[in-house]
Image (cartoon, rainbow, N blue to C red; front, top):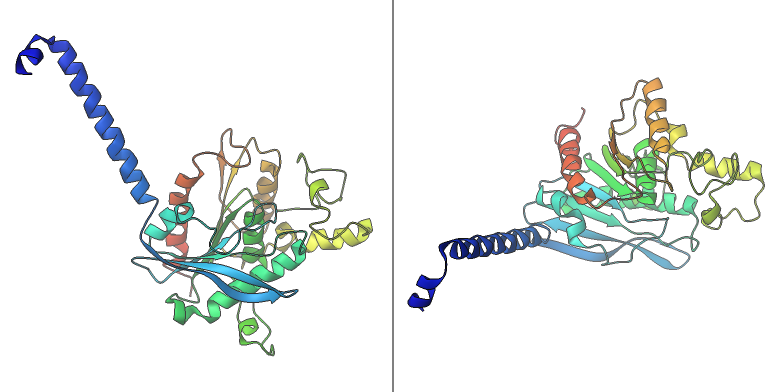
Length: 311
């Protein structure tokens, strides 16, 4: 063998060593990446937080190995359709979990099984449930963040703008709790259902998105009735100086939820003296391959607004 190697040209041996080193480095990087996105967690799936029409509404509670006592509510929704109990993968929230945040992946009944209005009500209920059980879950009830994308971003923005006190006279103590969140970091949320602009879902001024008419339960509604429903489900009409600090990431090539949805939300907030940072992803459509890495920016946002909350 030594004689054979001695006959191999030096340049070829060098090239082989470089190649083997590159392969080893690639394997090590891949292994490290796999390990990073599969952190050790303690998860409890299918925790029932309410019921609707005889169906359980559930959330998955994913607790990191070294929790920091802070919570992130994940809106498990795309097109207002939800994953089911146990279907939220750990890798999806790996950076947040490694930063110590306990994740509450709140599911709902997918539309049209329930309307978007009902889904919004259920997300309020989910946050109230988390807050009521805060001591049990080892989190601070006054420091809860929210995240999500698309419909999940819309639901998160609803909570950021409309989350608030519960009913002090409610028979269920969960419903007496607040549904307010203290920070939001969201991807391409729907902000104004009455003005879809250049969206591929646009069918005319003030009309519901064409693929989601059943989702809003407005098949037989008049235009005036839809305007009331669409208004109440549009975060842009509920911006106040007291809304949760909100960060938005949006792609400039998104045709389903155009960038203008976030731009108009930011502009309206600015008119009211509220700063809503908007990070535009060049060429980003309705989602992009590197979104997972944007979570690191979300973590910094949550660290800034949850670790040092306003008094």
